[in-house]
Image (tube, rainbow, N blue to C red; front, top):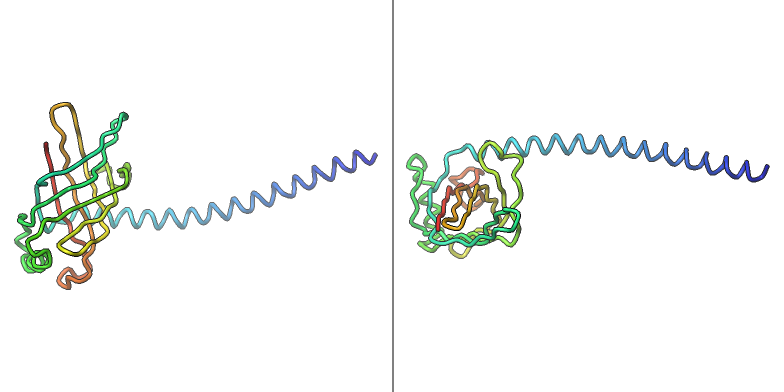
Length: 183
């Protein structure tokens, strides 16, 4: 009889704990819903930013990439000349940025692997976080791109996006450099 009460007690305790776990799971689901709404808003902002006309158009002078056995493609380093084509309609902003660069090369570096860019599947397949160096200043940057490689050629095309709060004529918008490279 004692064994029966003991067994019923364990079952009751297990049932109580599983019900509590269900309540916690419901709370977690609610939190995920809120996060998903934020993710959707962030996704829309990224897509809108990528649709904007870039301030600069550039060809890389040199770049380094890593291609893994599964076809993964990551950019480690891109070097761009400060002599870039600009968006003529935003000459003042472009001139301000070029002045801060002071004719030095622009360098994008990343120590991270690229990730599939789900939010930008319409245009770019990959996303990589890194740093961009303009003159003596360094900024966090996101690089959205497509890349391919075979035994004859390696190439990429994408947009480097970063904020430069010191440039007032940007009015809070991000700097977009459309860049491509081939070797």
